[in-house]
Amino acid sequence: MADVALFVHSTGVGPFMWNKLLVGLPEGITPLTPANRGYSPSDLLARGAPFSLQDEVAHLKAQIPEGTTGVHLGGHSYGGLVALSLAMDPDVPVRSLWLYEPVLFGSLNAEADTLQAEVAEQVRALFTDREFLLNEDTGGNDAWLERFVDYWNHPGMWASMPDKAKTMARAVGWKMYHEVRMVSQEPEPFTHYRLSVPTTLVYGERTQPPAAEMVRRLAAVNPHAHVTELAGQGHMAVVGAPDAVLPTLQAHWSRVGQAQAAATV
Image 1 (spheres, rainbow, N blue to C red):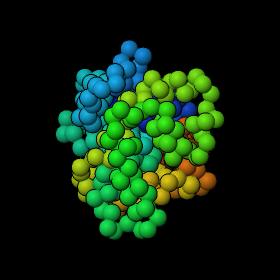
Image 2 (spheres, rainbow, N blue to C red):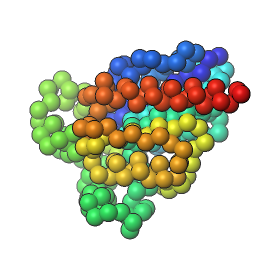
Image 3 (tube, rainbow, N blue to C red):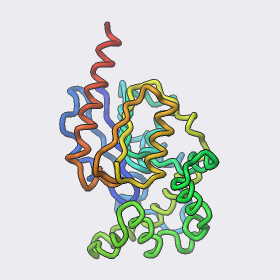
């Protein structure tokens, strides 16, 4: 069985976000772009249904065909945390990781005393807002969705979205709420995510300060990782500017090929 490239989508989006980033996939690697739990019309999570990061990992592991010889992981935002969790699973034969702004707010909060003021202020604001993180009665409702969407895009983004897009977001709102709780309550420190495979970490120049800091801290414990800052881009560039993101993925595949060639010498 050939290697696969498993791409994990981010909160509130879906597998479609990867469509324009599969160009130039190396020969012998089959792309997998499954939907996360709670996103398929037949798999929506009912309000009140419990969910955990371990549930997500188990769901995505099940998408890997039996006999796969190697797994290359890609992830964005929440999908980056899931990809990292998969990479730590001894049953997954990981060959490389490409991550665009994986979010580990829980890991960052554990190091709050060492953060620069601007980053610390945003992290503190998140963790002191019990309404946003802990109120299951309002989590995923319109006010919650507006705050989430506007934070990662720009103020007024939710209000400007067409009704169809809002309806789709409402359908997965409860799962989105769970995902935000999971990235905030992630108990592992950055040092847990030490990797020995080719790793690429990408962040946007215009992203939120905590997102860039999370990439820097992951890079600090993975000195072999290749880190790229994308000029003029923000957190949602994978969706909104795939042409700007694609070269970082193609460069990643090139480095993976070089590493594999060196290993056979």
